[in-house]
Image (cartoon, rainbow, N blue to C red):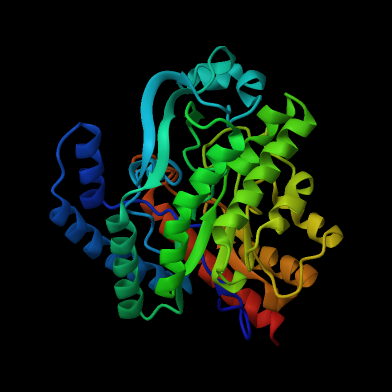
Length: 386
């Protein structure tokens, strides 16, 4: 994993807004149409080449494929494993917006979310063994990103994969006898993708929004409930990562990309010990979101282990306003002053597209934000290395 030796490097959280030609395939699938695999793969290859080139031009050092092939950052894995059956009438195991749906019921009603009267409905139910069955998709994604990164002259490239805590985040277990068996089955299935990415030479990024998003709902059931739930899933993640060097792994934790009050978000100080238990070389966290920007203070009290890096979000998907490069630089310099300039890589809070069809900002705004990230990193680098 490259780090900031003589300047602040830049990256992002992973999901970028799909171009129309890719989105058309997603729309066709949603409509129940049969998508011709070779045509889809060819379209992806061209789109990934373009988005990687655009990232490099915007000033991003460590790039990815935009997660263009995924139906969702988390539930995409349901199409790559066996074991799940959709049930639109089942409630999910966790209300991942927490008690915000009660605190701001009128807002959620206005957004079509049903407010406090409705838990998040529409689950994928585990009804048989979870087995990884789709090796084509991950190998295709690896090949596309490798080719595109080489052509664009990218410094380094990463592929995101979901964590066990977040995989099938709408899932309900009806098959395995215990929660532990269920979670470890997910972890063993995900390990196929973890290993494939590591063996390809790309960086592996593990995405884990639900570890934080489950906090409010589970804490309402009792503090011990959340800790037991989270610790089991961190143990399962490390089990799935076994044998992969930490310096090849990034762990991304966020609070969900939806535009909502986020009062239910877990405080960083309450979960930072869990984050640092993950056997990863870098930790990507939300830090520009106005609900979390103050949490740089946590790193004054919590020591970042030697040899580890922070990837704080210094631009956010949560606002349409494009962050000024000077603000971006200030955020970077602040983190550098706490954990050391060589231990900071500038990133984004979260992905800019939640799923195949949910854009958090307009594409032009997304690229302006990434360009501001690049410019802010250059300003910070001049100040930190002169």
